[in-house]
Length: 171
Image (tube, rainbow, N blue to C red; front, side, top):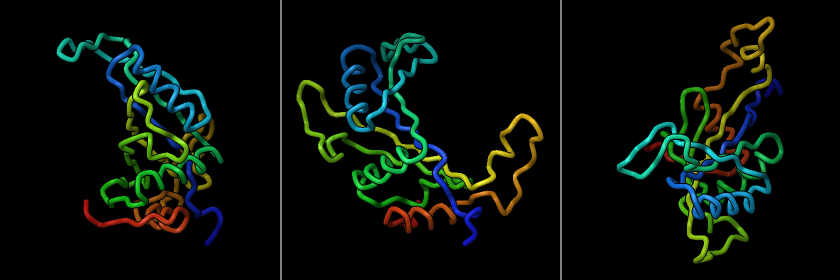
């Protein structure tokens, strides 16, 4: 295959929604920092929801974006922690995919600590091909040619070969 046609990982976004600020949010930050070896960023509530006790601009979750080698390494361990099975419905038309991890204790080296609690996380993977930047740049922006666009089948094939993931066709 042409090296310009090979799918690549653009970025991996890891998100833990805690739903409240305070000690649980600090615990989630600590756990995500231990797993990824990078510093997460807090995400704030967009609006006030009195039924859930959430105020506007209150920090209620944390997120982290990984790129390059760090993204690839994290994705390898995260896919093993999730069970190396993905469904076809977890992939979108542009070739990106998402999956969840129910407990942070599924990661190697992580143990249950009753003071910390258990946190699940969402992992969103954005894929691209070489030359993808021409559609995003400010100067001389061009439309991405059809042969350079990724689709669901290309990404599914890449993930199966690269990470040894089995994909069930159930939506």
